[in-house]
Amino acid sequence: MSADYDVIVIGAGPAGYVAAIRASQLGFKTACIEKWLDEKNKPVLGGTCLNVGCIPSKALLDSSHKFAEAQHGFETHGIGTGTVKIDVPKMIERKRKVVEQMAGGIGGLFKANNVTPISGTGKLLKDKKVEVTDHEGKSQTLSAEHVILAAGSVPIEIPPTPLEDGVIVDSTGALEFQVVPKRLGVIGAGVIGLELGSVWSRLGSEVVVLEATDKFLPMVDQQIAKEAQKILTKQGLDIRLGAKVTGSKVKKGKSPSVTVEYTDKEGEQKIVFDKLIVCVGRKPYTEDLLADDCGIEKDERGFIKVDDYCATSVAGVYAVGDVVRGPMLAHKGSEEGVMVAERIAGQKAAMNYDLIPSVIYTHPEIASVGKTEEQLKEAGVEYKVGTFPFLAVGRAVAANDADGMVKMLADAKTDRVLGCHIIGPSAADLAQTVTVAMEFSTSAEDIGMTVFSHPALSEAIHEAALAVNGHAIHMPNRKKR
Ligand code: FAD
Ligand code: AMP
Image (cartoon, rainbow, N blue to C red):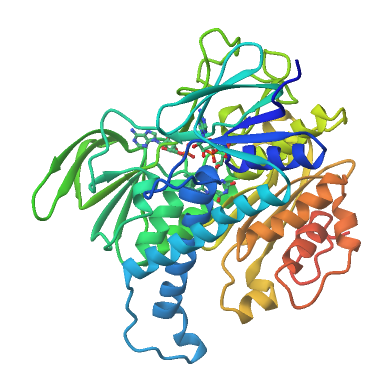
């Protein structure tokens, strides 16, 4: 008897919905199961990314950046705006509409690509069967030739700060504040903590970020991280490193608050906030996903075990996105989804895990691809460095947006670009151009020989590449050739 579907995908986040679309494009009869419902019980596609992650956080970052610009950035251009006000409920409503538009688009893409959406909770049984339980509790069992698990991740909670309605929230709660908290605490100076801290700081909150480790952004090239710490501190974020949160006490009532206890090198500390955002990372989500006898193995941190091609321990079952190892990034999961669909179709698709760009959407943005200087040192690779500041880029100066720099690292012998790290305006898009070049094994000289538009922010990439070999034009070179 033939299976109900060629491919069943569980989870319609950026990993799952992309896998489903690509599988259908390749001619497979494909269904995608998603359990998310909105407050009106309408099925919602798009997962964390579109609903409570990438997209809504960027909507609020953009609104709050415009507010901060209107307050502090216009005067230098000769523009007077009087007193600038923020209507927080209106800002949150705009964010909701952006989310609705983007997440709604996935339904259209499914229709156009013949993917069957199924609303309910999917559970992998043995022999590639999937039980789907709908929202009334009714179950059906479907069979598939191939199953792709894309159940994503959820925020980590820590015992010292259990979530408390409206006072201690996770990243999802921090996207819904209806007023600007006067005193805002953020636990965790990671990507999400810095982005959400920036949103509310720009709108007027006094933000204190408590971070347990002594190093700021340990995964980022440390020259860029130091620059970031300086700029964000100047913007008003009070970033306290080596501050490990150990407890909290919530005061309820008309003006609720939370007293947070933490330890730093001076000993035990206490600080009071009106609201606290817990941003200490995310964990893979596999609740209700796997029947005991389905044969799928997990690692000690709860990630579904997969090989380099996202195949699990069960033949014909794959897992992609946040539910497997690797950086928890939407584009990483999407590319894995495409790879798996193409491998199911017999193609030799593979993913380059060494070239996954990553971005922190503060202002200026922090973006990187490839190896950091610290990683090259540790691996004993001989390298050359070229840096170029945005202060010497005409377009950045004209826009009054010239904080930051580009740093490029290349192999000392072959000149092959090994990493690019940027803090500056539009860093995400700039780092992407270098990612494309690195995918084709570019040398710094290749980028240096490429014609760049003038005036454009990307000239910083050109000049950093030239600087790698001591040929920068708009800056004195440390070594001349
Ligand atoms: P998810 O997006 O989590 O989707 C999984 C889906 O599976 C969910 O819809 C869930 O309901 C569904 N599901 C789970 N179990 C079942 C089941 N048993 N049956 C049916 N359905 C199920 N990443 C970036 O790359 N760039 C950013 O700027 C960025 N910003 C972020 C900002 C915030 C505030 C947060 C929280 C995250 C951000 N991320 C960002 C991370 C990004 O959102 C995730 O990496 C991405 O969503 C992971 O995609 P996924 O498809 O693996 O999982
Ligand atoms: P990320 O994993 O990038 O989202 O970052 C989460 C951050 O939270 C990490 O830098 C952790 O060091 C930090 N963190 C985790 N637990 C605590 C804690 N109890 N107190 C302060 N910071 C913490």
